[in-house]
Length: 444
Image (cartoon, rainbow, N blue to C red):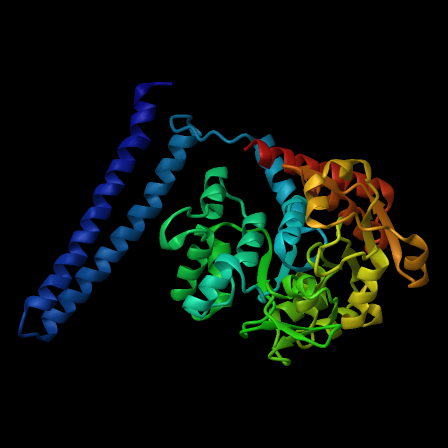
């Protein structure tokens, strides 16, 4: 190809840029004259209109013709845009896969909920996390008392679990100050508190933070009201405060008889009720039964909306008992307690751990008085609740955690088989493609 063939479109680009500049100058000159001139007549106004209209026309023609010239350079190969069509196709397909995933509403709080969300986001982008705001301890409690905001801790953890962030950003938002007046305070909590300061309400602050961190799905506080927990113990004493309830139950050697919230008629977010209505699956837990899961269903209309929903209702059983809350509880005891506060139709399936070998190394829990939750199948079957058995244990620094990847896989399979009625081949194909998404995101 001759040099002149390349020069023609290249010269045209420069020419149209020059014309565009001329059009801008014409408009600027006209505006300047209009502002600085004190006396106006008909001829001057006509000249001003002509000058501006001509300038706009010149800019329009310059832009359109300039674009054509650039396209001509691209077509001739002088401007190269490198796009890997195969990679682009895979990326689009994988995003479509997540968008078409089941609509899942998760209800709870604490580290258990955020652990599950980390695995679940690789299978669907249609996730709504409805999170308790009853926390009054630690850094969240301090901010709640000092600034009068809802406790940010559980919500922060859920946002980070669903966020598409670099490891450094995740580490930064989870960082806790070790000295000074901010000692033990999380930077992520402060970030959310600051966002609340520039927002209309706490819900708006959560959505803005979610947007900044490119969150998959939604994270919603269960209510915007200043909610607190109260518990009546079997000895008749009343204990106030989420952080004090298990402590006092242990100290007074008296089990929790009844859990309550104040205000009693705390209103839920409309978005939360709508998400429950549209869900394919509603998942409760894992997390502290009395202080993370049940507080949500005590909020007005949450339990009734879950019962009325056509979604499959699943409870993720805890792996270990929690001193002061669920001492000596088997899986069936968790389910009975959930039914006590949420109603008979609050649960269809329970996913329970059967991996006992891994728990033998969990010495720390034995020291704290916790023990493995017994899977008492006969009692569960009497309740009319279906059981999904799975190996859910993951040890981290000697502490028992749910295996987020395995739990998410079991959860998705259960939802697709029992609710969406997918055949086995389609489920396996979906799981395989979801694994590819997960591997790619981890690699990046």
